[in-house]
Image 1 (cartoon, helix red, strand yellow):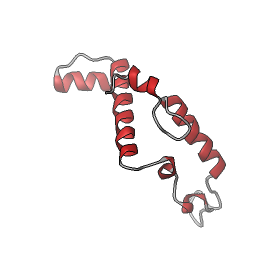
Image 2: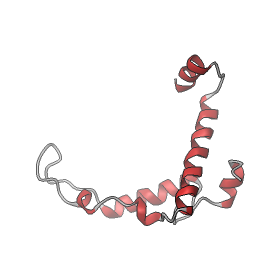
Image 3: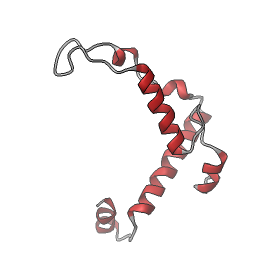
Image 4: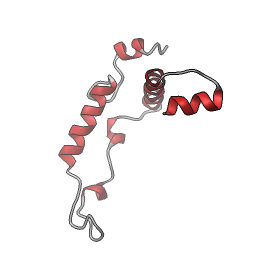
Length: 99
């Protein structure tokens, strides 16, 4: 596991739960930084070409559904503890001890 790799490299005894918490804190802090710099949920959208049918290859004729992608984005925000605009909720910031 990643925890075992980290222990082997650093000597730190850390669980997967702790690693997941660290990762969640990093993602949330990065999100807060990006918001401070002017990024919004609109910047989380894929380019239009992703929603056009592929013209060759194994995905020929297939395209992503923009409504499904928007729904997936909203779901991601929810599980991260962010509001519908992708802004971390104050409860999440407190939970992760971000100041």
